[in-house]
Length: 191
Ligand code: NI
Image 1 (cartoon, protein in one colour):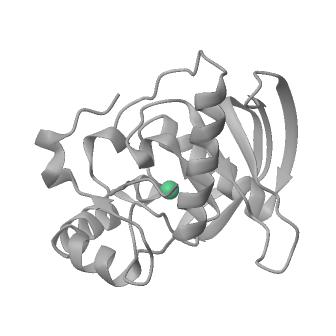
Image 2: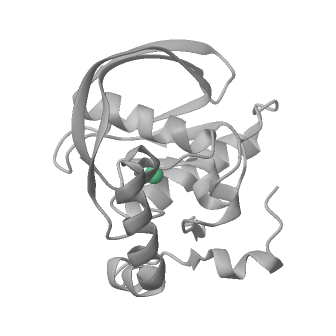
C-alpha cells in the first residue's frame, strides 16, 4: 500500500523521532508499505517521518532496477562509524525535484534491529553509505539541505519554498503518491 508522503518543511520532518518498541505484524506491514512508497517515488531510501510517523525506522534499497533487490529495514539504527568524507549530489522524496552537492561520508558501519527485533551490523560504502546517513538524519529531524552552507541553505529555502507544490506535482505526476504539505499541518496529528 502506498502511503502519504510528507513534504519538507512539514513539522514531522523537523523533530527527533521516538524509538520503535513493538515488533509485531503491524511493523512488518508498515515496512512493506514504506518500501512500496519508496519504489513509487523512485527513491533509494525512505524514513518513517517522511510518511508522517515520528519513529526511528527507515528502509533502503540502493540496487539498480535490473539488479537484485537490496531492500532492508533499519529499526532503531545507530551509526557506529562514519568516515571517508565525500561530496555527493543528494535528493530526497520529501524535497521533490531538488538536488544539491553536499558533504557526507563514503564509509559507514550501522547497527540496527530488523523487523523481528534482532540486532544486525552492516558495513556500507559509497551510495549505500550515503543513503544510510541520509535516512538516519531524517530520524533526528534533519534533511540533506541542512548540510549546505548557511547562505546556500537560505537561498534554497527561499526559492524552493515558493515552488513546493509545483515541484511535487511535476515530480510525482506519473505516480500514485499523495503529498502532505506543511501548510496542511493544522489538521495533521503525527503519531
Ligand atoms: Ni530524504
